[in-house]
Image (cartoon, rainbow, N blue to C red; front, side):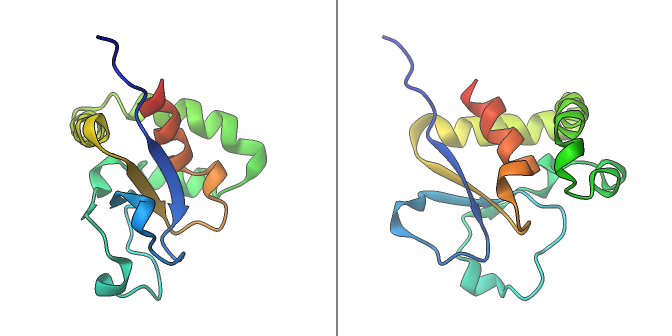
Length: 121
């Protein structure tokens, strides 16, 4: 029997939680400003999968650096701690919808977008 494609999405943590989100997983290393933990309605906070502080700082959410950020971040995902966190996300996505949450203004050029690509590919 063929495996079904994982249903992984990206949303901003600042958006109102939706019933169709499934498992809501924050993938930022730093807790987002102005969000109370009870209001976020997270299933979990998986900060170990986030990019290194050095890579995050270098990237600075600059759209022109996204391709290189994506390449470097994928390399970081091979590091043991991040690889373990990625496998955890993969296991979650095996059986249910997972919505990866990030505090960035542009989630389509964030680590969450890279993770969706990795988990779906």
